[in-house]
Amino acid sequence: MADDKKEQSQEKRENLKEFGQITFSRNIHLLSVIGEIEGHECLPANSKTTKYEHVLPQLAAIEENKDIKGLLVLLNTVGGDVEAGLAIAEMIASISKPKVSLVLGGSHSIGIPIAVASDYSFIVKTGTMVIHPVRMSGTVIGAPQTYDYFQQMQDRILSFISEHSHTSMERLEELMLDTGMLTKDLGTILVGEAAVKEGLIDEVGGISQAVGKLYQMLGEI
Image (cartoon, rainbow, N blue to C red; front, side, top):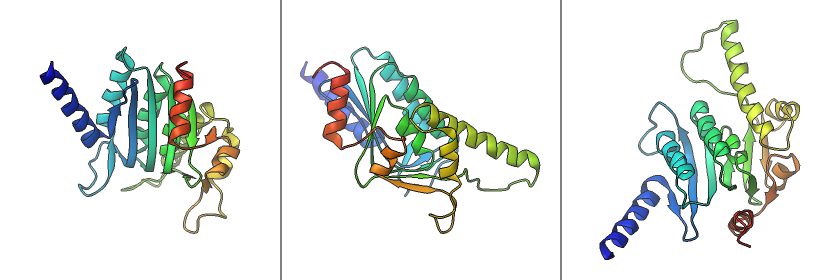
């Protein structure tokens, strides 16, 4: 019995160290999305990353594990790979258990779909969300098909955000293509209450409000 508890404690420490994940005593699973969301290509070793190949199996296990009652997602991310970010967002949205997200620091770019994928979302007063057009690195073919592909990617992102928040596609496009805020780019920065007013996030609050909301959804308050 003592050996089993020791192994479970060691496993929790490893999950927290390697994946930023832990299960609270009341069977709430914590998932942290930090740094840059890594896709099919590995980022430099000195970069803080969230690896989708780690997150997706964990989310599938949360759905399957009857002992886990809810999910709390903490975000402080600059964005990253579009396909990986959308995959994580779709997985979170499709989990049948109560889910609450909390934006700390920032949830930029493809981090926005992840933030809104939960059943209820919070952002701290100083938290930021940056909406901007899709960027592409590497060789880009100057052909109409390339621009069509860019538009398809943007439509996928905006439609997901619109379906899981209180913001319309039209308003999201306006924010994405704004030329008056970012000096070297298109887009909009929303800070705390502004993200709530735009309908992206449900409420301004911190960890106590997020955990309290999750317990309320579980019927434990």
